[in-house]
Amino acid sequence: MRRGIFFALLLLFAASPSFASEDPDEQCTARIVCPPDKDHMTGTWGGTRTELEQKGVTFCSSYVLDILGNVRGGMETGARFDSSMGWDVNFDLEKFAGHKGTQFHISGLWRAGQNLSSAVIGNALVASSIFGSEQFRLYALYLQKTFLKNKINIQIGRISTGDDFAASPIYWNFVTNAIDGNPISIPINLFFPTYPTAVWGARAICNITGDIYTISGIYNGDPRVGRLAAYGLDFTLRLKRGILFAQEVAYAPNTAPDSKGLPGHYKVGFFYNGSTFRDLSSDVSGASFAVSGLSAKKHIGNYAIYFHADQMVYRPGPPQSQAGLTPFFVIAIGPDNMNKFPFFIDGGMVYQGLIPTRNSDITSAGISYAKYSQSLQNNQRDNIDYNGSVTAVQTYELAFDFNHKVAITPWMYLQPDMQYIINPNGWKDRKNAYVVGTRFGLIF
Image 1: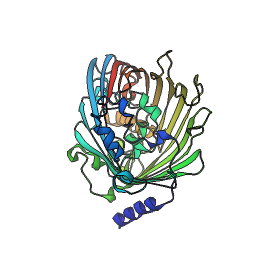
Image 2: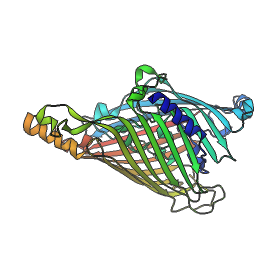
Image 3: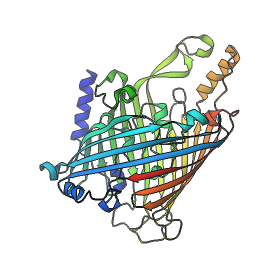
Image 4: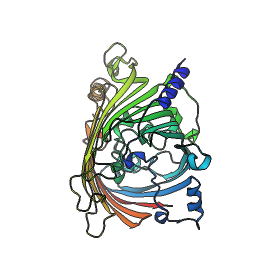
């Protein structure tokens, strides 16, 4: 029955009248943006790449390497590296097979390295955003269809919630995983598929006006799909593990190509996962399970609410210029009794072209604050008082990220980075950590 309901909802989304955002940033997937041929390290492949693009086949690949070291605080000092190589192939089926407004997309990745945060610092707001799923694995596999002069946009197949929801290209300017990709509290609190995990799902974008649009999505909510042993190839539907629903409404003023005003994005989203979640403090009778020894109370369903705002406030060049200063702000909240981080905020500023004559360089400063659940803290105090546990009470973690992305060529960049982490893992007795290092990237 659940399987039939899921497929019916997929078809409903696929058939619904939805409209694509006119903001080109909203069309990026898997965080690989295909630049012109001259902006690839490997160029046009002797003309072959250009010929394939004319026939509807576009290939992109990128490589990112993080070398970061904790020079003070945390559990110990030390350095680690991790890397991520992604590949992305898109078939324009209008050019390739005559199917108007239809795209077929497949992508994958290869990751390697170690996690500085778990191995050296011991914090929750992970220092490197490219750590996770250290293996070769399949990522996205989907069909995308547009109608009515690109105003209707649907996507169905193996996709990731984090590519469309609680997402913004402005986050990609940061090295810390607290900001880069998606606000980290959402995928920590509930199964919210993010790169590099894709699940069966469908999403529809609806353009209400030129500046206002909505995104609706439905996804398989089983976290086992992303396990390493499956290499991204687990195509089964275990719907008893839950279904994830996502809804976002956005206002994007001055983002059309002919706009002369300063662009901005204002988004509010709601996410619901119908899986089973355990209470962080109460047992089946409502008392503290740390005291009673009984099993934790089970809840069906968990949710998160999300708000994002970014607004360019200064642009020294013409309206078409992307150089300028853009502050941003994010807040995510959820139920205290089920979520490790029921309250999370981050924000900062991004300035492209801060240094004269370096209009492609990007300077970014961000701050992230994650508050640990009061229910979790109550459980930890009960463990200390009644069980003699030496477990500390986790309160909050605060992280700063400052970096400068240097565009060496259109297809190569170097990004020196500094991070300062207060209360690693929420423990006040763990010394604040100071991280320095760099990110290096290539577009093939």
